[in-house]
Length: 180
Image (cartoon, rainbow, N blue to C red; front, top):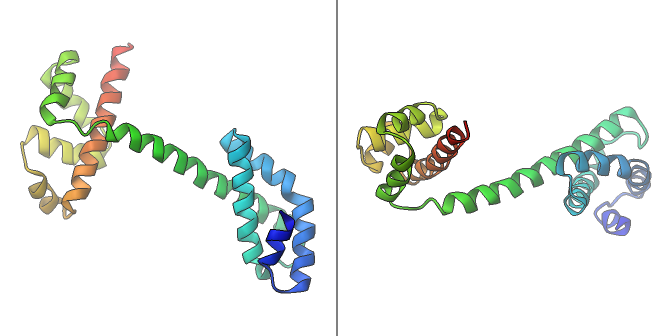
């Protein structure tokens, strides 16, 4: 793998510096990534992505062995791990929210089986503003999506997406209340 990274670097001095960095910090970078991801393959991917970034920015590294370089490498690995973590969780969320593309009537029938209208309205009021406002206008004030979009200065697709995600949040809130 080291050979691949070295092909990304033109200057021989930077190649030597990178090789030192690679052998000196790769295990610590892996540990930092694993701390976030708790998955061997994803952690290895995070370290790989970090090394690609480091190889492409070798001009910004003065010394191969220094606290500053160690910090830079660890931050690169952590940031890459966070990106992978967010990507993995976004995919799961989207899969879940896609299942919520049900009719409003079916959605509220599901909710009203568990809660009263007042409890659902109160639960909507307790959502994050990004979901609460479009959901409140749509379901409580009975406004159309295009009117909400105009009022909030958003695209209709954005309002629809927020309503779909708001449904997921609302079902989570209602579901959490059942456990009490």
